[in-house]
Image (tube, rainbow, N blue to C red; front, side):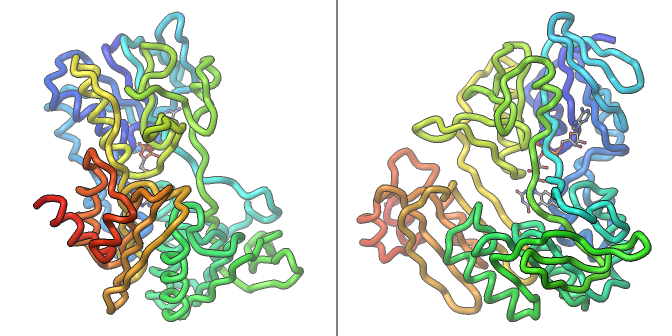
Length: 408
Ligand SMILES: Cc1cc2nc3c(=O)[nH]c(=O)nc-3n(C[C@H](O)[C@H](O)[C@H](O)COP(=O)(O)OP(=O)(O)OC[C@H]3O[C@@H](n4cnc5c(N)ncnc54)[C@H](O)[C@@H]3O)c2cc1C
């Protein structure tokens, strides 16, 4: 079978690419091949509402009819095992081959496996897919003590949900603050206080050295200092790695993701990559960057669909992100990694806004329960002229006032 466009991976980026191609008027044939069974779905609720409610229908991007109406061949439950660039063909695990005019790699990421003893025991879980979430949901109501290895977004979202459902929860974080890879110290401190207030036992600077077990079941976690915590369920939430092996085996350049240019093309003009699996040039200095967010997957898909329908443009969307942890909504506009100065103000009732600067230029704004500030920050940061530290100081570091002043 031959297709004008073959998309590998039917997650957020792969699905959106197929849908956006049709929205842009693409009339050629499209095959969307995904390893997971069933209709394409969104992941964010898996660590949030879905754990409590379990309503799968709310996860799907579109019902089955959408694919028929839009002539998108959805091959679910099928893994692509190799790409032959010379023949312009992909091979599936079931032995079939699909020819392509253009190939889109939207293979996403997978959870990092911890190199410690005990990770294969019963009662050790991780969460990336709907199947993982269903297994986790099934055990959660009976869990007395959940140990979470990793104090990042997903670990903390699940910890907050499990705590609200009545479980005792301990979070083990190897670094000296929560979400240290992606948020500023003031936001880490805010969430540390909030989660401790909710009764979650958070241990910083704490490395798990092994998961203990009895009769094949997890019984707890042993820490590097030799102490132990008991747990009847252990969640490993220690970050993800890009699914880049298919590209690498096909001879494409990979380094923490499949390397693409500012139009999301690999060095093979017939192959593009996007979403969690792709590393693209970001910002003025074109720093290779791999983002793991819905915004990035969706905006890259729209950008790629425009290029593939003759409307090429540079990918330069402003990154933004959210995380819901108990009653707190964290929203981030811009990328604050590498910030050398922070200014914060709290609006009471758990609200917080942090402005992140690098070399006296505003590069990111993090807010907690302050959606107005987040929206103002998105517009500010998307503007052409950078916001300076002086300008922000003159506006009292009030993002909404700053935006209004700029608009006027
Ligand atoms: C629990 C959870 C909560 C999250 N919460 C948020 C949030 O609050 N906000 C936010 O912005 N982001 C959130 N994210 C991140 C967001 O969901 C991802 O950034 C987004 O799904 C990336 O889309 P993608 O299509 O690049 O990758 P994925 O959604 O991972 O899709 C990739 C797909 O490709 C398939 N695949 C891989 N290799 C092959 C192959 N060889 N053959 C066929 N298929 C293949 C995979 O099975 C997978 O289905 C969350 C993620 C998780 C797991």
